[in-house]
Amino acid sequence: MLRHTMSYPAAMKAPTKPLGMAEFVTMLATMVSILALSIDAMLPALGQIGTDLGVADANDTQLIVSGMFLGFAAGQIAAGPLSDSFGRKPVIYAGYVIFIAGCIMSMTATVFEVMLAGRVLQGLGAAAPRIVSLALVRDGYEGRAMARIMSIVMAIFILVPAIAPSVGEAVLLVADWRAIFGLLLLMAVIASVWFATRQPETLAVPERRKFSLRNIAGGIREACSFRAAVGYTIASGIIFGAFLGYLSSAQQVFQTVYGTGKLFAIYFGVAALAIGAASIFNSSVVMRLGMRFLTWRALFGVTVISALFLLVVWQFDGVPPLWSFMVWLLVAFFATGILFGNFNALAMEPLGHMAGLGAAFVGSVSTFISLPLGWAIGHWFDNTVVPLIAGFAILGAISLVVMWWTERGADLEI
Image (cartoon, rainbow, N blue to C red; front, side):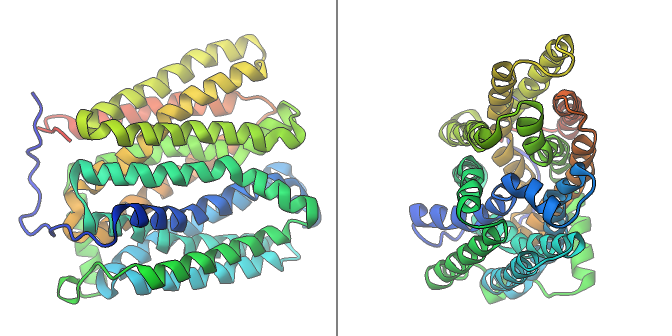
């Protein structure tokens, strides 16, 4: 029988619970949801933005999504270590300031390059509340309880995309795409005020790590010494690459391939609800079944269902009936929803004594891995769903291999 006997540092920080769980989870979900809203509320406007800013190749508008993730990946590298050195709250404040500046830049852009620069800046700023929130969770919880909190936060986080495109569509009914950035700016102000007035600092001064490049490099080397942290981070990045490919090409798949028009937001939202439902399901059973048990089965499920559906897709020249595509999407996304919280918690489990840097390591490495994979899937869009489904099948299989390597010879029960 597998047991939880991994050797973690003796000096692991004891959990220090901040607010009551209900308010803590709701506040964190609001903070991290701004990232999801910044991505998904823009999807209905991609075509309009491309037209207004003179984008020649429709596939290039996907860079509006990728640019956000690029800034997000880079921002995590700084946000995590800085929060370990100066505290969680000052770093989150700085992130919101940068995010708001990016919103203003994109909102006032007249050329595509400035739009992309603003999106990178938004991602850079959004990284602080998103990644430091993981450190806040790790400051207060550990083990399966940490996985439960992360699953609840991720459930709310994933529910945002269910309504985000509809929010974008609603804004476009009364204003142009620039007003969407104004909405994001307003939400950032609200979230930052809530955080400032209610959330206490969870990292005491004596527990902070001295900020230096040597300490950061040493922390990264230490994180890399944990097979679980490295392996689960890589596996997460690989399968998230498939999901990023979906985000980049979803508007084209639904509106170009299937001609859903304004109903795009509804179909997109239904798929997002499957991920949210999976996260809620995971939070209710993970304490009993364990993270590894659920992660293995979800990853195997998304890989197999995608490979089998790919055989069906080829029979329809790459464009199966919309109802069958939605069935695949719902099943695949339910499995993916189980993976999100568990992979993060598994990777963070040995890094409690360096939660900020650990969250930065896990988040930035997984995002940098997913970026080129997601870009490739989106860029290969050919007016069929073959690249998307093949991406989930292939990357799911690779992620399974990485997970097997991670746990080979380990004695685990987490």
